[in-house]
Image (cartoon, rainbow, N blue to C red; front, side):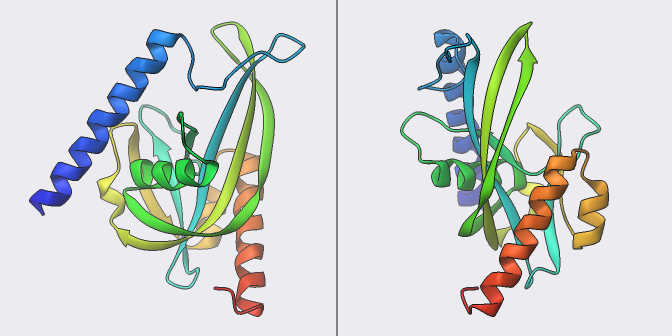
Length: 180
């Protein structure tokens, strides 16, 4: 148990260090840039995680909010989208998972400190491997595995609901093709 705790603390320390480096650079991700329209670009990755043969699905509640969403976060320097998705699921969900396939990408524009940000998020279907939802980091108040219909109802954003449904369809497809 002490080894697990030390590993979790190291992860938090590493995350704080990455955040400090981003703040120093004034960006949230290496490779971030401006589009022709002057928008800032961000690239994130996340997971749609199932457990117990898809009887339950992971959702998170970010710290200090009333929102429920899928785990996701910015891709760090030197990381692939798959590596970032696995890291974010572990940090925000407290669990380890295995990628089963790509669910899709979401693109949207939002405003941060008065500036437009063009964001792309890639989601992967993941199978729970180990860990407990209470092992999440400080950026999350709560992480839960819920039955599919409950998870859909609890999610705040329509796009998250759509991606959860796409994840379930990909799971069903994988079962039919003996991939999962």
